[in-house]
Length: 201
Image 1 (cartoon, helix red, strand yellow):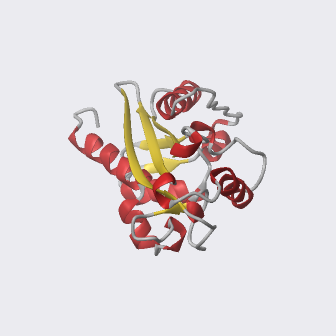
Image 2 (cartoon, rainbow, N blue to C red):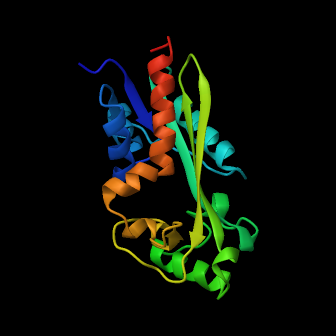
């Protein structure tokens, strides 16, 4: 029997499945699920200039629309490229109206043909958790390099251009290996630890 419901400020199936694997004692619902349940449109915004502020804005918007009986999760992730002064950062998902693949090709053009030591970048995830009893954020950053070309089939977003120290992109890893280092997975594990240790649950 599920004892609590977690509502996620997303309808991304990959993200939801990852959350369900960790919170398998909870019912995990998407925005779309809640819209059907409540019979109304739910709108969450991300108009801030940091990952943390965006995650908090999303989770507060969601919480205010679904009600205090739920635990809400909002997240923001992105790639920050040092040679581009942190761009695209919080604008990773929306800096260009195009597919992820096209955006990745354009990012490679912006980075240009520079040496690996100048191609450093950072993959950051921030997760905000909110209920009537608490509001808390968790974050994790994975450091890497912008690859010289798009590579790999097992990924989404910027996985095909985020290269690890071993020379492989995230999209070239197996699902198991990618999950072992995924910033979202690492951050969700922090949330899970908090939930398990909290007396509010």
